Length: 85
Image (cartoon, rainbow, N blue to C red; front, side):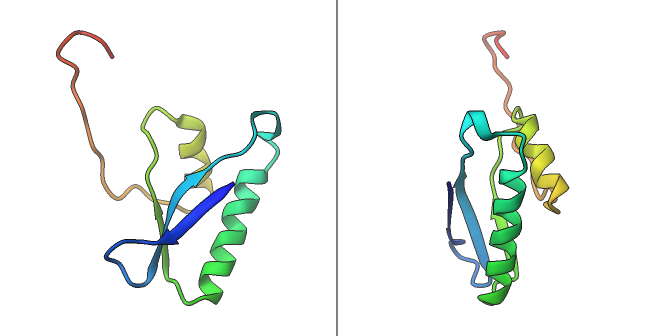
């Protein structure tokens, strides 16, 4: 499942709201194929960029996005004051 739409406030960009691959199908290239298909379709539609948010702890997703050409544009950090991580 790939949920995309126009990026709010950015005319030439799409935003990935959610991407989900069934757990038993992960690691087989479906996520990469979905992103590559999205990129092709987005270019055909005249979009110049695609953005998304990924949690810092989601290393598998971060590797997928980096492998398909996404770059970090900002970092949000949080410090727990109760000793938890």
